[in-house]
Length: 100
Image (cartoon, rainbow, N blue to C red; front, top):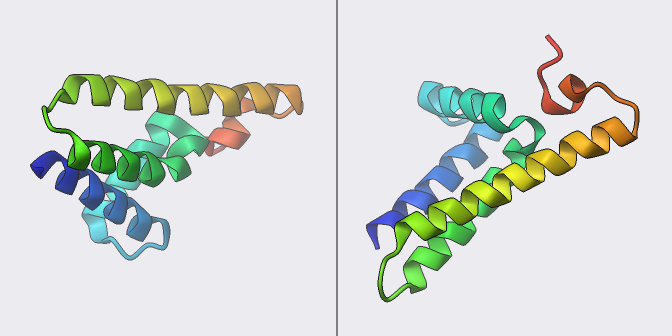
């Protein structure tokens, strides 16, 4: 139950960070997530909500399996965005937000 609340809280913090209303901790979390997954950062709140629902409905906690599944989902989305940017002829840095 506590892991589900944590997942919902992370989703809310990231949602508020998108509109710059999450404070300095939310901004740091957003920048860290953007560095790790690039353009896939906008899918993270959705995945955290799904993880929260999974944890909420689980009778027996197997947190490692859920976190591994989230890792695969997020890396798959990031890989798909990278492949899409290559297919469109864009630099991967453009779609990942690292074009500084």
